Length: 367
Image (cartoon, helix red, strand yellow):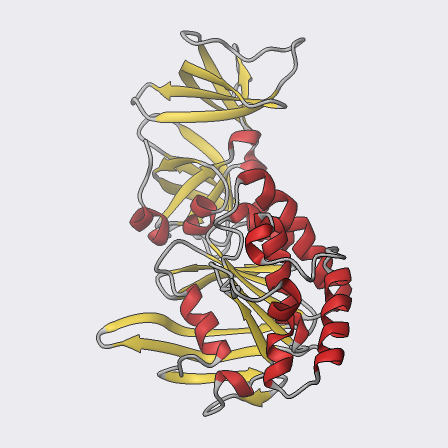
């Protein structure tokens, strides 16, 4: 079974500190849904409210259309995987998995059978009699997932479960988690500050800042059409320009900065009098020795070229001394400009996004 999770106007105050501020969102049954944001944005507090460890100051938490007010963690159709996994070191793997079933009074033979079925589900057959200390980090992760699935939850809650793993193992476990979720069709709610995890695994992502949801959408739209400057800054890299719109027409505008003027595409809610910034992703930046008249072009001096395998990152300074970057393919036939080169960066109008900027300014511009 699987269930929806809905937050209706949820607010959580700790004394005078507001951790979650009037959040409303619905997670669909069987969906892999991620809350993404920096530390302190309120995402873990949301997970604790869904699990029942804390009650919201205001608003409702519904699971399967049922209001969870007054229902404790052990009575909710949820299971939680913590960052440290919390496996019992003195129990074997199968005993860890079957612990919740033992608490429900299930007999040992049935518990063992169920544990072995779950070990097969997470692709760990034959390790039931080992101890957690005898397993690798990725194997322990799968055991924690199997233990959570043993009680047949309708909703799985995951609080940054991959953060302690090394990079390659994290990337491998992303695929494993996604595959397990698809096989079981359990609703997954995943908490992370890692944009790569959220974009790679999720059906939808909610980007949070300061207790509020900034945008909820599929990963492609979060990345390609961010709702505001904060989302653009937090999800992926960006070249940010400070300035203002001098005119707007048919979804485009002229954006004036202290070093150049650009023709831009207007983001959500942006008008002529909006406080906004200009954002251009490094992969949308090209180079030209003689840019065509009227194009979006900016003179720069190349400072460094960082080889990243299948692509290279070119770091530059504009004439105001601000750092700019471009990401180009690793193509020996067309190498990037080398350090010390004076050239122009160019970018198309549809890749130059003017976005509401209040959150981005608070987040800080990186020179």
